[in-house]
Length: 154
Image 1 (cartoon, rainbow, N blue to C red):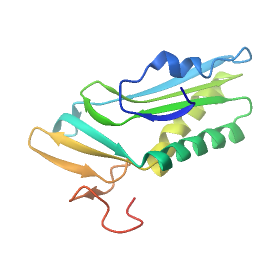
Image 2 (cartoon, rainbow, N blue to C red; image 1 turned 90 degrees about the vertical axis):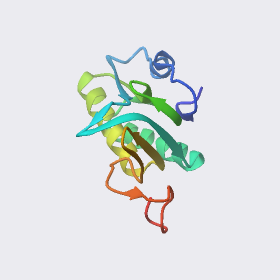
Image 3 (tube, rainbow, N blue to C red; image 1 turned 135 degrees about the vertical axis):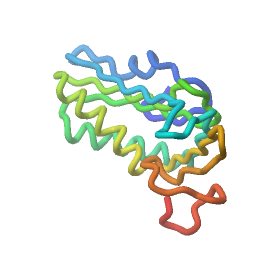
Image 4 (cartoon, helix red, strand yellow; image 1 turned 120 degrees about the horizontal axis):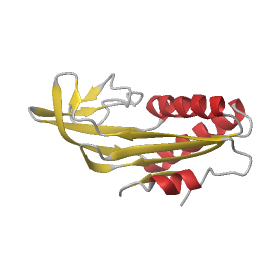
């Protein structure tokens, strides 16, 4: 298991946490992102994540490096799942350990926001009344044909 991974099967939450356990840690904070059923007035049936895996892993590593630069003494592990996920399945696990709890909370929040900003992961939402590719994780663009229209759409 690597500190930063994109995988196709279920995520072992404890294995992600174990990677950041440290004798000097006063806190281990985790963020577990799951598939929700309702998004505003749309009912999700399931969704499918795809990624440009080599670049996605590099970006996860970048986030880990950024966190260690911002919060001294932190350790970070991030695993994101791709493939078809059902309601309540775990899509992402972030674990951060640090000497103090405030840093662990802040770094965990920072990690999920940065994932949405810079990691090339896309999802196809399957609702009970249609489907749509979501072009970025901030859900600010969609891809009608399932791929970016031009460079820079990612």
